[in-house]
Amino acid sequence: MAHLCLEFHLLETGKQFDGDIQYLVQSGNELLLVNRFLDLQYDLNIVGDYSNIVYRTVGFQVFKMDRSCPEWRQIMNLDNQVLFLGENSSLSLSASDFPGCLGNCIYYTDDYSEFNYAGAFGKHDLGIFRLCDASIEPLPCYPLNSYAQLGWPPPLWITPNPC
Image 1: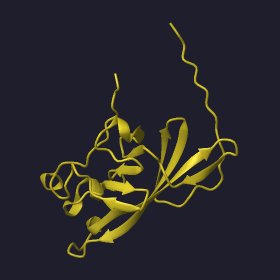
Image 2: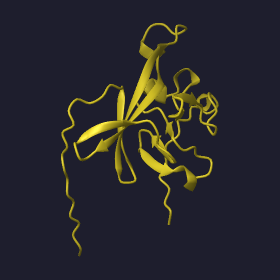
Image 3: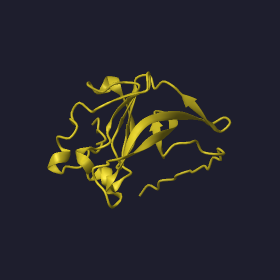
Image 4: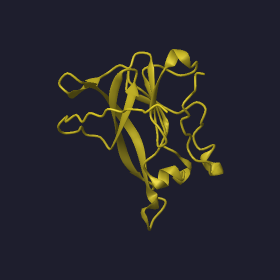
C-alpha cells in the first residue's frame, strides 16, 4: 500500500485586508485571496425582529500570493480564468473550457446569512462580478425571485470532472 506524504508550510503575511468575507482559491499554480464586500440593507416593511436585514454583495478584490516575499499583491485581471465562490466550494476554471462562462469574472452565491440563504424577501445575493469594470449582473440561469419564490436554495457550484 502506497503512503501519501503531504507537506505543509505556514506563511505569515501580516494584517489581512478589509472585506467582509475572504476566500482562498487555487488558480493554476497561484494562490488567490478574494475579499468580498457586503452592504447591509433593511426592508422597512418588516418590523420587529432582525428578519428585515439583508446583505448584498457590492464588490470584490482579488490578491495573488507572491511566495518570494511572502505577501499578497492585488491583481486587477484574471485573464481567461473565472472564479466560482460559494459555501460548498470555491474554484477557478478556464472560461475557454466552459462555453457560456465569462473570463475575468467572479460568479458568486450567498453563503453568509441565514436570511439571505432562506431567500428573505424573495431575493438571494448571487450574480456575476466583472473585474474589468466592477459591475454586477444577475446569473442568467437564475432569474431574480423565480426560484426563491418556490423556496429553493441558491445554486451550489459543482466541480466538473474532465474524465
